[in-house]
Amino acid sequence: MDKTRRVAEEHIDVTRRFFLQIGAAGAAALNVAPLWAQENESEPALADAIAKLEYLTSADKFKMFGRGNPPPHTLSPEKRREVGLDPETWQLEVVADPDSNAEVGSPLSKEVGTALDWQRLMQLAEKHAVRFLHVVTCTNGRRPCGMGLWEGVPLRDVIWLAKPTVNVRRVFYYGYHNDDPKQRFQSSLPMGRVLEDPPGEHPAILCYKLNDKWLTPKAGAPVRMVVPDRYGNMSVKWLQRIVLTNNFKANDTYAEWNNDVDSHMKTCARFILAPKKAESGQPIPVTGLAQVGMSGLSKVQYWLCSQDADLPTDDPYFAKGDWKEAEILPPPREWGGGLPGGVLPPTPRQVDPATGKPKTWPLRGTIVHWAALLTDVRPGRYHLRCRTIDANGIAQPMPRPYLKSGHNAIEQVPLVVQS
Image 1 (cartoon, helix red, strand yellow):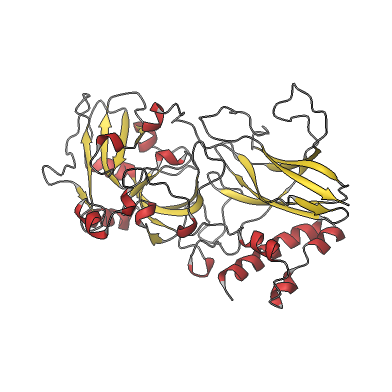
Image 2 (cartoon, rainbow, N blue to C red; image 1 turned 180 degrees about the vertical axis):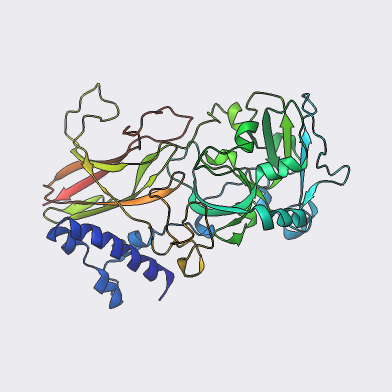
């Protein structure tokens, strides 16, 4: 059985069980598992949409951005080895900021031959490696770049090797960008967040694996930063230098671009399958994903509204809409992402090692899939919208509706129902 059919069957089963719970119309609409058993592809659009519900994103489908001219991942293997983008030649510096009064007792420096190399990183990994599930989203992106299982060594364990002493308030870091300062892309974190994790949160890591495989050059190989709970600009690729500073300001590249670099990831919903046309009298299946941000997730809702409706002008976030409950789907039995058999390796931090199941659901910093069935829809032209309600009971796009701190506008798609 090929991958598409396997994933499709799994999600047909999960979604079919949901629709069965809401009545006979739902059962009729999603009674498609026998089609797969008979290798009948008479519903290719539905089959393709269901296949896209694979939970983890395989590396080749991850949306990866490579800044620089040329982007580092496009360099030849020989050039990557030359500039330290190969495990055999990679080195990481951890040094004090020469423009501040930060003090470091044992800097990891190429100049004095103490920089961290791949072998030493792997030695740290034997004792300190962590794995966690986390979604990557761009601050201003409308949709997640991908959902991954990341593995690496906590940043703090590497920083302690450099023995910082006093006057360290912030950590900034950057990767290889053609040895051109104008191409540098850097990010930063408060030292307190690096050294200590809030309860239930994950550490920032020097990451070397995605979905239990070594990073590809496009994904930031050999080592990148992965910062949980934040947007993708914090997770710098091709990592080569970490600087400890007493500068209290966020000196991120994104800060110069008018972005809120300290924004935590927001909770929001997006469509996956949302038909643009449908026949009156036929149930309309809808699926989507919800990004679970800092405030968690309690509900996903949808609203079907006539395009001719006279909406109140004092309700920019549609709080007065006739929102209906969608179903948040349970954890998948097979996680996808290219993992053998779709099975998670031992053991991501969010997973109970005794049962192999998530400790809670939904998981903050990840995604969930959701489904709804529209029934008895009369002919007409509609707008279909979706939104989340976070764990504090606050509806998207509140409590942080502002641009430049994470895109979480309510998604709207057109739907024409024909007689």
